[in-house]
Length: 263
Image (cartoon, rainbow, N blue to C red; front, side):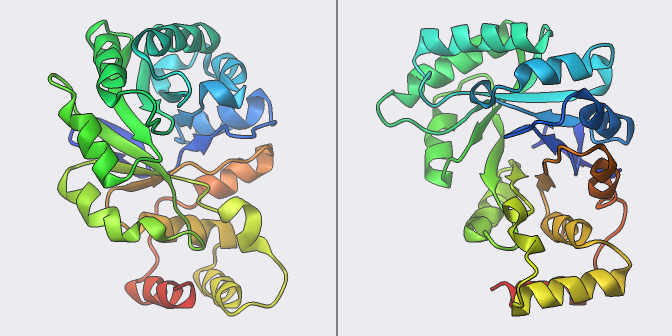
C-alpha cells in the first residue's frame, strides 16, 4: 500500500482506504483491509455503521486512521459536541482521527459549527478537522472561522463517471487539502456489461495492465495529486482486489486515454 500526506499535517494515510456507507459486510472485510494496509476507515453517524467499525478496530486501534462525520442536521455548537461523544462511544475509542462536517447547512452559522470542531480538537477528542461535500467557497468560509486548526480534507464524490470536482483540484492542491474520493467506483456503474465507449476502453486498459476494472478505476483517481479513495465492499475476497489498486501506476498515456473516454 502506498501512502499520501493528509493535508500538510505530516501524517501519512493509505491512498486506498475503506468506506462504510451502505456497508453490510460485518467485521472480516474491514479487518482484512487493515491487515493489507487500507487502514483509513471512513464512516458517519448517519450511516449506522459506527458500531461495526468499532468492533472491527477493537484491538487494532493503533493501526487505524479513523474518520467519521457529524450530520449536516446536527451542526449547532452543542449538537456537534453531543454527536462527537456519541460517535466516540459507538466507535469504542477515545479519539477520532478525522472528524468531518458531512454537508454544509445554510440554516446554521458555520462559525458555530467550526467553534465546536475546534473545541473538540482542543480537548483531544479529534485529531484533525475535515469537511465533506463542501465547495471551495464554503470550505474557505469554514476555514476563516478557525483560529487554531486547519481543515485538512474535503470528502467529495469523484470517479471516472463523476468528474465535476476536477476544476477545483488545483485549489485543493494549492491549499494542501486532501480530497477523499467517495464512490470512486461510481456505485457499480463502471461494471455495466452494456456496450459503451468509455467502459470498453476501461476494460481494454485493464486487460493491457493486467489489472481488474476496479483497480484501474481507482488507480485513475490516484493519478490526481492529493487524492485518496475510500471504495466500499461487503465481500472479504474483494478487499484484496481493491487494495491491489495501490502500489503501481497507470502510464500517462493510459490516464490520458481514460480522461478522453470519460470526458
